[in-house]
Amino acid sequence: MTQTITAEIATQTLTPPQTPARWRVADVVALYELPFNDLLYRAQTVHREHFDPNAVQLSTLLSIKTGGCEEDCAYCPQSVHHETGVKADKLMEVDAVLKAAETAKANGATRFCMGAAWRNPKDRHLEPIKEMIRGVKAMGMETCVTLGMLEAHQASALRDAGLDYYNHNLDTSPEFYGQIISTRTYQDRLDTLEHVRDAGINVCCGGIVGMGESRRERAGLISQLANMEPYPESVPINNLVQVAGTPLTGTEALDPFEFVRTIAVARITMPKAMVRLSAGREQMDEALQALCFAAGANSIFYGDQLLTTSNPQAEADRKLIDRLGMRAEAANGVSAG
Ligand code: SAM
Ligand code: DTB
Ligand code: SF4
Image (cartoon, rainbow, N blue to C red; front, side, top):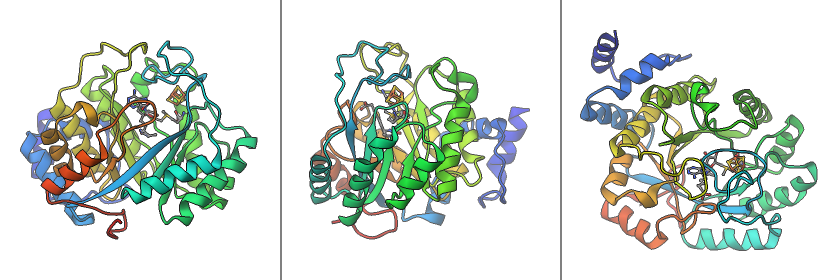
C-alpha cells in the first residue's frame, strides 16, 4: 500500500495540491519514504516557486519572562516540574527589552521574537507586552510573541498593538502528545490558534522532533499543520535540545537526515510558509544546516542564545550564510541591514 502511494507521489507533477489540500498522515509518510534526493528535489522545486532560495531570514529570540512555568512539557527546561537549574524571573522591563531589540537589529536581525514561560498571560501583563510590540515594530522589525494559551480578547489586544505573528506550537502528533504534556490538551492548543487566526494575526506554529516519536508521529504533526485552513504562515521545526533534568534527557538522537526530511516535508506540504530551522542548530554541523536550507528552510534563530539554551554564535552564522552564497533577508525579500 505504502509502496503504491510512494510511487504515485514520486511521479506526480510538482504542482502543489489543489486547495483545500488534505494531507493524510499516510501521504505525509509517503513523502518521508521517498529516496532522499527525490524528496529534496521536490522540496527545492516547491521552495523556488515561492521564495528566493538563497535568502534566509534572521530572527532573534529573547526570553522576556524566564522559568517557573507550571506546565509539565517534558522537553522544557523552564517547567517547575523539572530540576534543571533555570531560575524563575519576573517579566522584563520594557526598556530592557527594547534595548535588546535595538542590538538585534544592529546585528542584522529583521525579526524579533519575545517568549514568556507562562501557561497563559494574565490581562495585566498585556499592557507592557503591547508596549514592547509597538517599540519593536517602530524599529522596523517583524514582531512575534509566544506567551502560552490566549483568550480571544487577549489575541485582539495583541492585534491592536500591531503584532505580526503569534507563536504557539502543536509540538507533536495528537497520538504522541500525551507522552509529552499532561497539563493542557491538544484541543487547548488548537483553541488558542483559532483565537490568533480570528484576531487576524499571522500564525506561527510548528513542533519538535527528536523526542522519541516515530516517523508516523512526525508525519502526524506535519499533517495537522498542513491541514489547518489556512496552514500557518510560519512553521518552526525544532530539534530537541536535551537539557539535564528534563525527562527527555537521554532520548536517542534523531538521525540527522530524518531532520532534513522533516524540513523538506514541511516545505512541500506548506509551500508558502516560512519554514524555520529553529532550536537544535548548535548540535548540527554546517553541512547539515546547508542541507536544511536546500530542503526549504528559510529562517534561523540568530544570536548566541535561544531562550535558556545556547545557539551558534552570530559571527559563525554570518560566515556560514556567506560561504553558502546566501543572503540575510526579510521575509518580504527586502535586504536586511
Ligand atoms: N510557554 C509558551 C508555550 O509553551 O507556548 C512559550 C514558550 S515555549 C518555550 C515555545 C516552544 O519552544 C515550545 O512549544 C517548544 O516547541 C520549544 N521548545 C522548548 N524547549 C525546547 C527544547 N528543549 N528543545 C527544542 N524546542 C524546545
Ligand atoms: C520555537 O518553536 N522555538 C523557539 C521559539 N519557538 C520560541 C524556542 C526554542 C527554545 C529552546 C529551548 C530553550 O532555549 O529554552
Ligand atoms: Fe511552559 Fe512553554 Fe516550557 Fe511548556 S514549553 S513548560 S508552556 S515555557
